[in-house]
Length: 435
Image 1 (cartoon, one colour):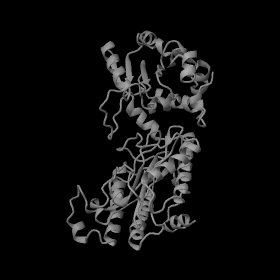
Image 2 (image 1 turned 90 degrees about the vertical axis):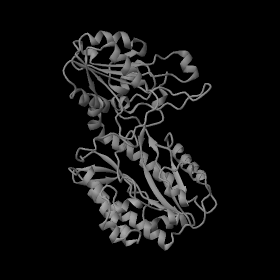
Image 3 (image 1 turned 180 degrees about the horizontal axis):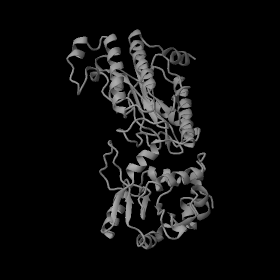
Image 4 (image 1 turned 30 degrees about the vertical axis):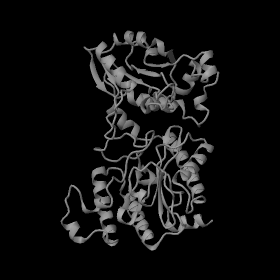
């Protein structure tokens, strides 16, 4: 029976996942166990469900993109075969008929490098046996600063059960370790992200030939989706923003329901996923094919800040200091555009500088398996980090919002722009729209 979930993508190697687990295990306390759970399949109504989306941590550790999966790591287990155990959903002929065959033991070992593969039904019995050898238990959680979880995840549910069943053990947190490790991208991961960026580029170039007065924002969304799917992506890495005119000034506008009118600019914040890795791009294009002088001036101001920000992102730099410096770059551009005055800058509230009136969001975030990927914001930038760079200027009174965004890999001596081949200059955008 075939394991279909790997067929859509170029999979990453089992050696990568073995290395990821080894890095995590090296930071565990002696005589400790770590456990990781896959996501639930979430219900909608009647017999409907949302598409399955794997939990990023177990995916990073195993590569298994399948529900009902559990990973147990016990580096100090007496029996070497107990040091890594993967529990997967047992496949059968009925599942194969209705849903397609699930991962069998042979393919699970080939994909992950884990030799001890058990069915998920054996988890509680095996885990209880292992806990007799352990002193501490690492549980995972989601401390992401932007997380707003209002439903109980499988991890939440299982963690509560484990705490109740083993109250006298030490409990440790896996997330701080994973935040450090996942933020440093391997070459295989960078290559996968590059594929996502290349697919995003193809979608954007398709859209440049499609945009004209009278098209609907959702039609542009459909053009992106068509190109993403035909190139092997599962679709958007996040809910796309296609905002024309005033809609571009609504930072999280996702209705994508308005008509694109002559003279307006369309802001398109979109990115393809590939193999569960995300791309995150923003481009702005004129509906009529030509920027006005004012639109071009604002566009070039944002582009100048973007390029300046890229040059600031280097190993050893504090992300806090970086955002302060980007604010200084933006302040200069807004002064030149006449949007703020020198007096406003001189008398600004340091907690909300004058430039925030027109540029109210951050400039960069980690990106990887998650669009807003994990990483320690209080630690210096390191080679191997991948960030977005996305300054913007939003002039609500002019129905004009401009944001530009690329994904960049930090290297020891600079950066690599993973979207460096995607049209960015205003002249280049106009030329491609013309034909």
